[in-house]
Length: 134
Image (tube, rainbow, N blue to C red; front, side):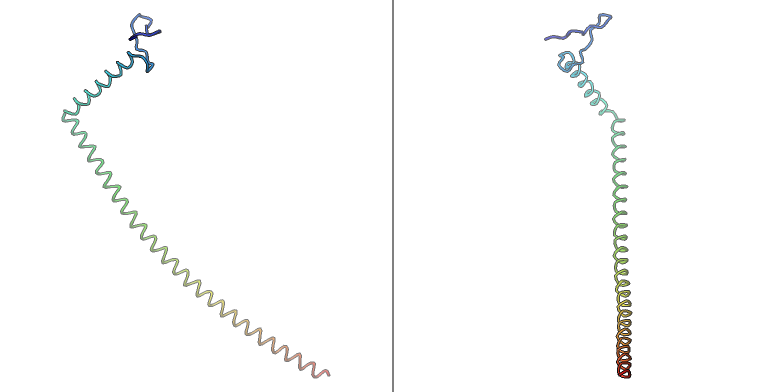
């Protein structure tokens, strides 16, 4: 097992850890570091401040959930309200369109009848003119 590879000595002669992941010394140092982190975590978990922090974070998450849930409900109510208003506006627009179409149809019928009457009277007038000319 090689603990010091090439270039692992500093200028002052002290050994350094080769940062390459293959280095045995680096792996050993990383394992010790992780063990220290875990022991620190275990020690911190046994302290009351740790529990207070966890409870504080838990309460914050509960508050966030309550706020987001209330916001979701509010948005659902608003969505239903907007949907109802849209459907009402669509029905009013359809009724108004039908009313306008009926009004225009009546105007077309009146104009058509007037045209037919004028056309008949013009034909009659022309036929009387032709009869008198002969």
